[in-house]
Image 1 (cartoon, one colour):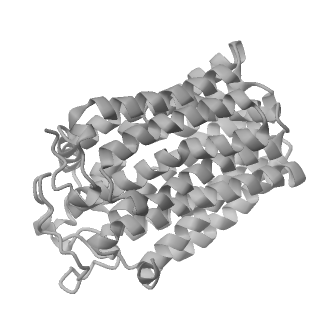
Image 2: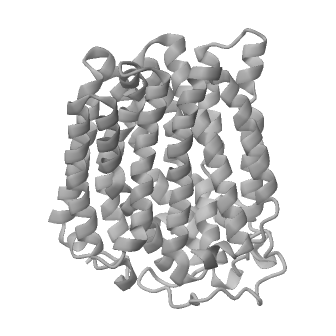
Amino acid sequence: MYELLRNPNFLRLFVGRIVTNAGDSLYSVATMWLVYRLTGSSTYTGIAGFLSMAPSTVQFLFGPVVDRLPLRRVLVGTQLAQGLLVLVVPLAAAFDVLSVWVLLVLIPFLSLLNQPVYPAESAALPRIVADDQLVRANSLFSFAYQGVDAAFNAVGGLLVAALGAVTLFAVDSLTFAATTLLFATLAIPAVDASDRDGPAPESRASRSSTVDHSERSTAASDGGRSVETSAEGSVISYLHDLGEGVAFVRGTVVAKLIVGAVVVNFAVGGALAVLPAYADGLGGASAYGLLSAALGVGLLGGALAGSVVERFPFGRVVGLGNVVGALAWVSAVAVDWLPASGLLFALALVPVGVTNVLEAALIQTLVPDELLGRVTAVLGSASTAMMPVGALVGGVVAGAVSTAVVLVAAGGSLAVLGVYVLVVPSLRRLPPVSNVSTLTAE
């Protein structure tokens, strides 16, 4: 870990991710709670969840853009635009025109601007760290994604109760400003055009185990394509790039994993949408922040455990882990008492955090650099496609029946994923990540 943190480019990317995730956590807590307080309806929080998650389903469209444009410009531009947009809420409140409709219009635009960020960061990591550091790098990034979320979800809940949700939007704009400055100092090596076709899914032999960018193009500091392909900007070329990302994923074990993830994400989308209403019965805004923090703590624990369990067979870790996680999740709903429920929710998501880290390392190790943005975006869109639908359905079901039904269904989906991995031979037999030499499903 220490060696990674001595890498200045990794450190800037990592710190930038921490800062912006802190702001995102405050924004998420403030948004869902403000929608709930303005309407008192889980149906509206379901709609808000749908609008927030729906743009992730088109993340794959940004893959060719990420692979084509300089990564530094993508990161800086998205942070700057989001920082300006979040100021709409405090301005609307200042002029006494804030309503739930302002939020429902704003939410999808902010989410859409965030879609290129994760593929860009994922594409940047293998260019700035060595192959044998990818699992550790992804563990640290999962800490940034989930650990900071856990802390600032709790802080966000307390700040909402103490200061009001609108204040957190103003704070969020400052975090975007700080991240914009950090990302502006990145130097990300470019991928040479001659490597564009890359190796087949079975091999990544062209990648060196160390990072040596001395022979990269002069455009390398932005992390974009080399000059030879800078003129390619046609729609045909874009569609070709997009097709390459989809074609690479087809027929791989990752594609099979997505099938199970779709079920989980549908149910989890519903759970996140009804969490404000569920927390309101346990103590209000502070309870909502603490429950959100518990979910983040679980994902963080799994992320940090990823580098520990990477030596065990991938299939068994994912399969058995999610079955155990399902039992913990359903127990949390049954207990319905905040300290115990929070702990059980956290334990339930540890296997999910482990899975996230191991899958990311698997993909980044075996997918060619020049395809990584496209492949990551395709996988992101496919795996999260049902989350917004789940949020919408969950909000409606909770309004008609109860939040407990939606939450129990989310726990059941973890069991479905675990059993699915254990009964599909090509998934169950997956060895440790370091021993996987191909993504092709047998």
